[in-house]
Image (cartoon, rainbow, N blue to C red; front, side, top):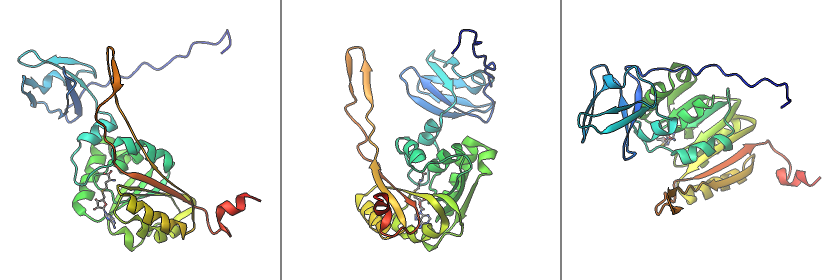
Amino acid sequence: MTDDSEPATYEPTKYRPFEPGEQIIVVDSKGRQYLVVLAVDGEFHTHTGVVPHTEFLGQEEGVTVRSTTGARYTAMRPTLSDFILRMPRGAQVIYPKDLGPILMIADIHPGAKVLEAGVGSGALSMTMLRAGAEIVGYELREDFAQRAQENVRTFLGEEASSRYRVEIRDVYDGIDERGLDRIVLDLPEPWQVVKHAKVALRPGGILVAYNPSIMQVAHLRETLAESDFELPETVEIMLRTWHVEGQAVRPEHRMVAHTGFLTSARLLGPVPGGLKATRSF
Ligand code: SAH
């Protein structure tokens, strides 16, 4: 910065008051959170009484209201994480702890053409859509596909929905798309997809699989080792929250010790002797 530089000016923040139909997170004095869908004639019921939705409507994020018995409730818009943890689910979702790293490992970027299978409740779809991906989803179950598409529309809206197409089909039978940038899998037998991924991905494309069991990982890694995929890697993400209160500053006693393993590899075409050999030239 030079001495004559002007301080940065920002557009004034555009406040957007709460509207009917919106989802908000309501937090009570103990930090408990509730997802509420606002309606003109709606009421938020808790053990401490009732708050009519009209108390929230037209207000801004951060507003605090009181229930009929005087308990305080603060309202804000849900983050993607908040929504994923509370949205209606068919299948088990991938949790935010793993969703963030998947974006980096799969290198999801605006315009990336991604095949996702299966889509389940759509938690991973929403995360990749918000990072700008264009997704074709393959899902066996019609009801899950519907649910995932509803969740996407509810939280991300029409623009994201226009980048999201879900087909009811078995990805083990093959992939129709060609020139894909990324393939992201959350299903029981990812090794069955490797031969299809090889023709569907463009060179340099990335395959990522989320799997709860290390036996699945071992099988997938064996199949990848016999394929044109290179640079295979398997990681697990451990997340430990801390209790911070006065002098009591320590890790929380309990943690979620295991969710799943993330395995990735890149399609780099047939290199005689494999990529490692070519590096030593
Ligand atoms: N990642 C999702 C959850 C996926 S659960 C989320 O974050 O919400 C696994 C899904 O894979 C289930 O919905 C299941 O129906 C689907 N599935 C399993 N085998 C499949 C296959 N061979 N082809 C397509 N979908 C499959």
